[in-house]
Amino acid sequence: MRKVAVERKGETNFFTSQNIKDCMKKVIAVTLHQSVMVDKDLEIKAYYAGHVLGAAMFRVTVGTQSVVYTVSRLNFDVFT
Image 1: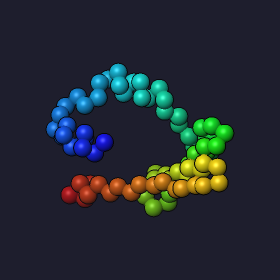
Image 2: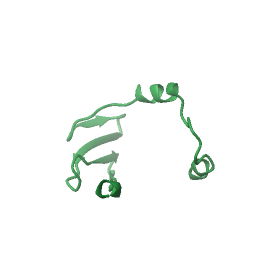
Image 3: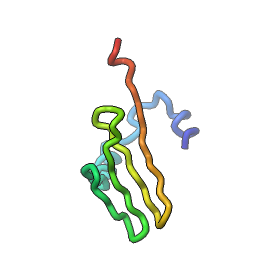
């Protein structure tokens, strides 16, 4: 996937308006601490991350295994 993205660097209109509309139809908004059961074995739960204002992390559980996903991105442009 990375190779495809790198080869298209600088290209405009990477996604069409219809691509974005189709994707947004699949989005499910969740509140913090809300669990979403994707199927009988897959649960996703949102948590407040606490390290950046508005940041969230997600616990993904499949059966008895789980992983926590969180991302931190600091935009240094806001300081210049």
